[in-house]
Length: 400
Image (cartoon, rainbow, N blue to C red; front, side, top):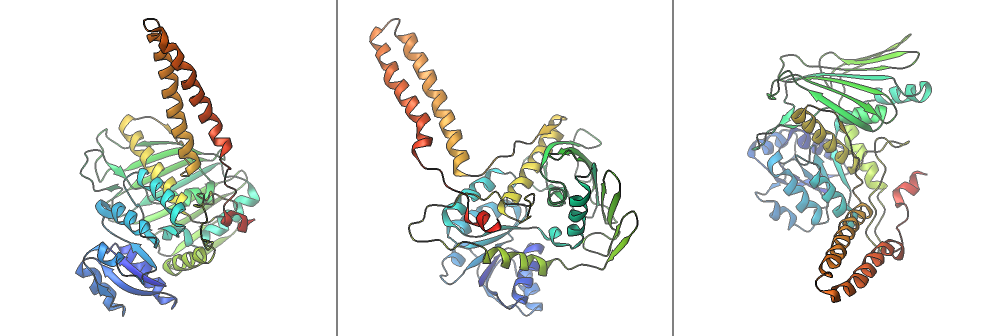
């Protein structure tokens, strides 16, 4: 597969190195700063350099793009890449809010191209061990997550309101399922970039969440602690991710050396690409898949990117209003968009009928307009039954 890299984000550079190292992929074009080109050259990668995304999209023999642009333009580049019907790997977060991620899910359904976020934390082998323990012991009672790092927790933005970018949310969902309630706190009411952040919440399974984040610190560490009914397991990276780690349980301790996640990310991409259904001529747009990290068989999809952005949005609201928020887990599908549109149109027609009724007091002939308006309203209610619903997506059928 022939790739183009747009931008020089560290995750994008690392994943393109891993993809080309498999021998199945080739980096053909690069659009980004000169420092990124020099980095690639050190590893024997010397793609043709372009200065504009439209120049890259005009090349006909490009199969896929890695979007690693700065946050301010990442969403725009992602939209153009997907609209041009290319497969896309995108650095997380794809945008400051979930609105663009919903739009990308609908475009993906139209183009039937593979769209995947870059989340290297998921590929560590210890998480499979913790999932096996959860399957054996039942849902954990408490999940504790502690992150201390040199990086920032908030995206740089022109808006005065801070936009959080919480690390590790994908791991929470992989280990304990969907998060349904969230509450965030900082030491002061005005959020500063170097403030500590505490996040508490509740999973759909009943597991309680407690997360602690300390940015811009001279030390780095990562710790995950899961308390079950009869046992407690703790995974610790004393030197931070992806350094050496230790998984401690009641009677055993497992040691993990420093881990390179990028070959696993490349393998995840290849597996998803191999499972992608081949579109047939004249085939209708695909329904957005419901497979994700919380499925019985976990699989990274664009739905996980949407859930992460929804979580960040609710953390932002919680910090602003100092209250807990229930997460309204939206489905980014045409069916959900249809229901929302029909609700708005139906409410508008009801108000119009009420207006006809009031005006009929002075103009009696307007009462006759109520009947056709009511007919239109009832017709819209049956529209959903007239159009056949799409069946389950092909990738979900393959899983079963």
